[in-house]
Image 1: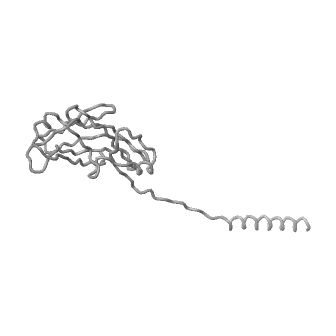
Image 2: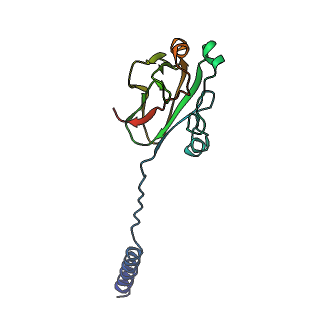
Image 3: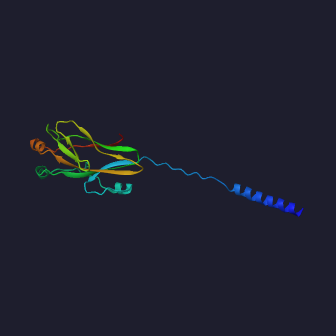
Amino acid sequence: MLKRIIIILTFLLLSSLIFAATLDQTELYVSTSVPQTFSVKIVGGNVTVPTTKSVFDGLDAVGTSSSPITFSTEDVNTSVRKQLKVLAYCNLGPTQIIKVTANPMTASGVNTKIGYEVRLIESPTTTETVSKSVTSKTFNLTTFSVNGFTIASKTFDIQLSKTDWEAAAAGAYSTTWTIDLTTP
């Protein structure tokens, strides 16, 4: 009889421990949502490519309306190329293209235009000519693969057409590029 009582008590003790253990069980669900993030900016050609968004955001853009890329008479006469770098960050995969639509340089009140060359420096080196005779020209600066948060860059330079510059009427010439981050 004592054996039966011990077996019953042991069974009740184990049952209560198992029951107590299942009362303590719960589930935890964790989730998040990563927003789409992307940006493009032009910086000086000697700027080191950043590795984080915060460093990217801290870089000063050049070629803005308040800080244009300016060519002097001496620059044109000595065939100076102004070196720049386009930077883009993106988390929208799998592939992105940095596309440019460029126009020849024009001045208010004159009919002449000034063309220029855009040389994409990093391999492969190619040259895009924005002729004074075109309305606009579209070309890709670079295509890059996106795997999570990615920062891409492409170094390029600009050289004005000395022939167009010498033939141009007096005036303050300028152009504005449209730079888009697009998918293929």
